[in-house]
Length: 178
Image 1 (cartoon, rainbow, N blue to C red):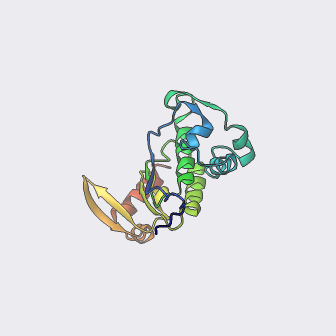
Image 2 (image 1 turned 120 degrees about the horizontal axis):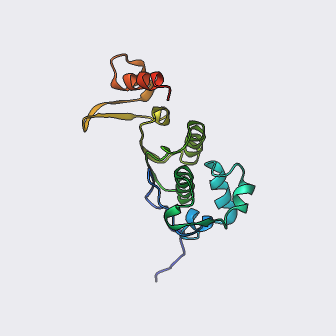
Image 3 (image 1 turned 90 degrees about the horizontal axis):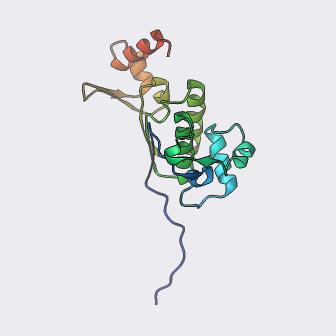
C-alpha cells in the first residue's frame, strides 16, 4: 500500500531583484507576499530587515498601505526594497541581484547587503552591479570588458593587484567620490 504524507512545498529555485522592480496594484502586504504564505510578523520583519521601514512595528502598521499600478506611488528605491523583502521571504536557493540597489543611497545599500548576507547565508548569489562596494564581500567577482570576461577572482585579491582592471575601477570610483 502507498502512504501519503503532506510535505512542505520546496523553496523556489530562484528569487531575483532587478533594477526596474515590479510591484503590483494592491497593498504592501500583497506586494511582499503575492502568494499570501507569510504572516504579518514575517512581512514586517522582512520589510524592516531591508530598511523599507526603520522598525518592524512601523512596517506592520504600513502593511495596508496602497500600491498603485506598477508601484508608481513609490520611489524607485522603495520599490527595490519591497522586492528585496519579497526575496527574503521566498527563501530561495539562488538569489539574482541585477543592479538591485542602484536607486538606493550607499548607507542603505550597505545595510541591505548586510541583511541579505545574513538571510541568504548558504545561498548562491549572483550580483550584477556598477557600485563596487556592493560586491566586495562576494567570494568571487567576474569583471567584464567589451562584452567579454576580463578577469575573475576574489575581490580583495583583485583589488590588491595593481595591474587588475578591478583595482583600476576601484581607484576610479574613489576619485569620482562614489
